[in-house]
Image (cartoon, rainbow, N blue to C red; front, top):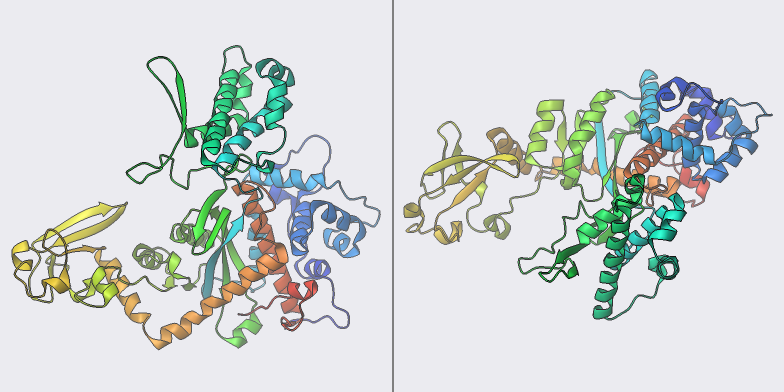
Length: 551
C-alpha cells in the first residue's frame, strides 16, 4: 500500500530522501574525480543538486543558493544547518567531469535500478517512444555570418592564448575594427554582390590567419586550439581556394552546380556554429531548427488499475544530432533498455521509427513487437490505388519466382545490396510485358518490363502483416496508447525547459536531458506517492510540476 502524507504536502526533496534514501553514492562517480588533492564537494550530492535544479528549472546560481537557504534541499542532501554550500561554478565543473568520463547516464541508471528493487519497474509490458527537436544554446547564423564569426572566434581564442604572438602576426588595429563586435550584430549588406564580396573577404582573412598560425616560426601548440580547427573546417566546407597559372590566388564560395549539388558536404557534416560544433540545421515538416533531437521512452499501460499500481516512468533518453533519422536511433534505444533489464514486450512508436528491418529485427533480437504505423507501398500504382501494386504479385520464395496478376512468371531473381540493405530484384520478361493488355496498369518503365524490389522473406512477410493489421479497428484502438508520449514531451518542455539546450555540445546536452528525465521521474513519483493527479484547471508553475501519471 502507498503511504500518504497528511496535512501539508511534503516537499519533493524531503519525499525523495525519505522514500529512496541516498540515491547517488560518491563511489559511482569515482572515476571522474581524483582521490588526491584538496577535498571537494561530494559528487553524489552534486548529482542530486543538478536533478533538483532541473526539477525547479533553476540556474546554477539559483541552485547553489537553494542549497544554502532551503531546508528541504539540505535535508535531501544530508547537510547540517551550518554547511556553507559551494560556489555556483562547481556545478559547471561537475558537469564537465561527468561528460568527459561518459557518466551522463549514471544517475538514470541508479534511479531505475532502485525503482526496480521496489517493484515499480520491470521488464515486459508496454513502452512508448517519441522524439522532439531541441534548439542549441547558440545564435542562428547564416553562411555569411558563420564564416565571419568563425574568424572572429579564432582571433579571440588566439588573443587569449598568446596575445604577444597576435600582436606580431596581424594588424591589430584593422582586425579589431572588423572583428571586435559579433558578426551577427552587424548590419550586413543587402545586395548580393556586396554579400559575395564580404564573404570572400572573410575567407581571405581566415586563410591569412591560418597561414600565420601554421607558419614555421609560430608556436606549434597554437594549431591545436579548438577554434583553429573549427575555422579550418568552416573554410573547407564553404570555400574553394585555387591558384591560377600566373600565381594569383582565387577564393570562391561553394555554390550550387548544374548537377544539383551545392559543392558543400551533406547536412549532417556541416557546421552551423563555431561555438557548438555538434549542432546541425535540420527540418521536419514546418519546423526548421539548429540543434539536436531528443528521444524519450517511458512505460505505459492501457489499464487504469495498472496505472494505480505503478506510475508511468521514463526509462531511456537518447540525444542525437538533429539530422539523424528516428529509425537510426531505435536499435540504440533497445540496446540501452536491454542493459537496464527493462525491455518491453510491446513498443509503441510513430511511423518515423518503422522500417521492415526494424520490425523484424526487434522481434528476432530483443523479442519486442513494434506497434507502429508502417509506411504504405510508395509505388505509383499503390499511390494511385489503380493498377498492380507489389502486394498483388504472388511470391514463391522456395522456387525464387514471382507471378504477376496476369499469370506471367518472373525471369530473373537477383540478390543485391541497396544502401547497405539486402534486397532481391525480381524482373519480368519484356516479351511478356509488352503485349500484355494490363501493361498500362502495371508499369510505365522505359525498359517495358516490370520489376519488384523485395526485402528478405521474413521482413517482407512482417511488413505485409503489419500493413494488414494496421487497417483494423483493434489496431487503431490499441495504437491510441502512443499519444500519451506527447504529454511527456510537453512536461519535459514546460517543467525542465528541454526545448532549448542549456549547454553546448552533444555530450553536455545529453547530460542535461538525462538529469531532466530523472527530475521528471521524481516529480511523477512524488505525485503518485501522494495520489495527486494533475489538476488541468490550474495553470500555475507549481501545478505544472504535478504532471499526470497516465496518458
